[in-house]
Image (cartoon, rainbow, N blue to C red; front, top):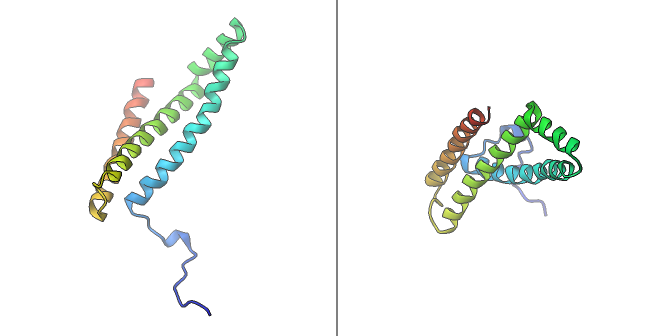
Length: 124
């Protein structure tokens, strides 16, 4: 028995609401922070080797690569924190409706962009 239902396989035609985008971003930033730990563990382990290794890690962290890694990690952390707070509030029964859920997602995404710009200026 074949089900008669529409099938849309062209993913470029699907427009996610803001709440869907925020949910996906929350997952992506969690994964990004996990992979940022690889760099943090490398820097920590290498810097404990010798004074020359410490100086090399310090030079890497003070260079453009260190800036990008630090800003990316702090950006991921800021959105993951904002998204996590949003999810906790939703777990308490608020912002579950379509309009309020999308509004809270837009606020979280907007706050994330503002925080990333502010952190970028502070780190520069």
